[in-house]
Image (tube, rainbow, N blue to C red; front, side):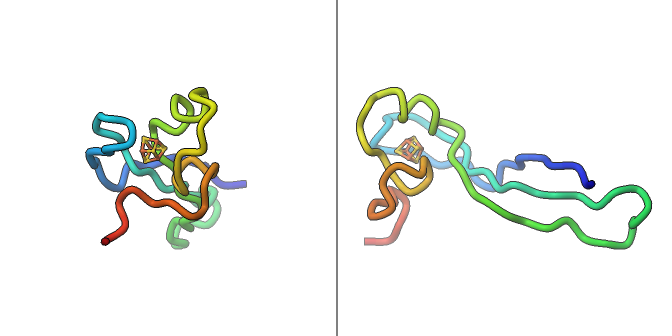
Length: 75
Ligand code: SF4
């Protein structure tokens, strides 16, 4: 089993939340017995998603509560 780490890819200002947030990716690093393998990247999330979820409002794709809205998508 590898090591799972959430890494911040970008810091962006989210107008929906009114603050800067970290956009993170799940990186799975291989075990020490397989040192030549690169990390596998998986799911994405927002560092503020837990707070947005507590607002009882569907927020965005980064929180997993509204797949039709991405506040950082080009308009
Ligand atoms: S979960 Fe979505 S709406 Fe909430 S702060 Fe993050 S990017 Fe903004």
